[in-house]
Length: 518
Image (cartoon, rainbow, N blue to C red):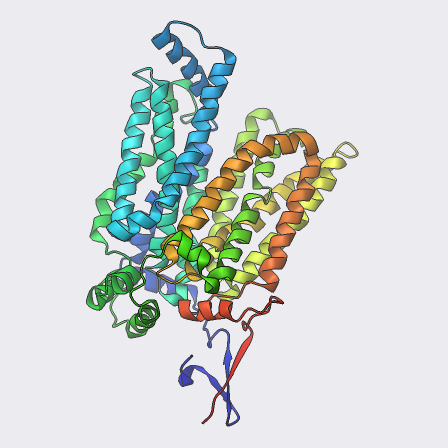
């Protein structure tokens, strides 16, 4: 129950508490001052370089050198076995190279609960960076040793690091951020993933490293950023929430907050953590089975299932596949399409930064449902423009504009707000298990999409965008009618919001009135 000082008194027997608890917007100047008062800004950058940045890079960097790697598989097979492999053999090995990344990501995301409970957030992140460096060495030496088998090992480890690192990055950052700018800080998970994707596209250009003799060097670039993290992160504390709630050390928690966010007693933040610790008691580090069995968390689990599932099947992969042909039909030369794609990557980075600027004032829920809604409308429009593309020379250019708008709604909506929501709707004891569940959904969806998507596109062609439009619409309606707003609230208050959801999908998000006897 909120404090009397934070409420608005009405009458003699009723207290009405507004959902934002008089939440005050912070100016950009005050936010920047808060970031540079301690070491928070450096911490965010260092964490991002070894976290979601790695996943983003590997998602896009593999595209450019793929024909060279397939050629290398062919030649290395001949070098070791003396005969020329069949086309089906090379295709199978290449498909395995692609699939092992997803398999590694799935296993890596599942290990987050075990590693964070035994090594802490910082220790697990450092281990992940060390694994990334080892996998990079394996990838680099695969070429001089003529071993395509080493590529398979490296890709699996790359995926493992991406799955584990993405979960660790989100948990570590969320548990280190103060409530008032928690959303803004957590959005950087998406920002660094977009930066990784952009760098992967950039270095993949033929003028940079997109040449046959450089493919193994190209895929080793992320290791540099992992080395930076290994060198700097040990000088930062573990997550303050982990230190206090899991380890029970309030003094070290205060020191960690002061190190990250500057001088202060942080009494309010510590009191909130202690209140959460009292609710948890001795029940730390719950399992995924506990998470799924707990009836008080059914709405949280369902929300993550709907949101992450709809993000996976929102059509972002379809846009990526169709974009080349769409740009070609719009009259863009083949050799220039890569630069247009680079422009899309740059727009993703900019929109994720913009999302960070607005997430604390507009709110997670509003950004998310508007993002999904915009994506749904754009998917429907793309279906129409693809159908009418031969009727006018202007139509393909309209489709190009719609693609850019789709990425804007995607980056400024679900992609930007999902990491923050995942951190906020689960209390400390369930968070690692929740991220195992979320990671499993993400990488399972990624794998399924890889198998299903080619058949879906072949069968439905442009009509597949209607299906994606419906998926986005379902997500928008769910978020609008069910999901409570989380900005400016403690994790216990957010948990209470989910407790108050009725069967009809309403919550106490707007006004919560508690009758008390005075």
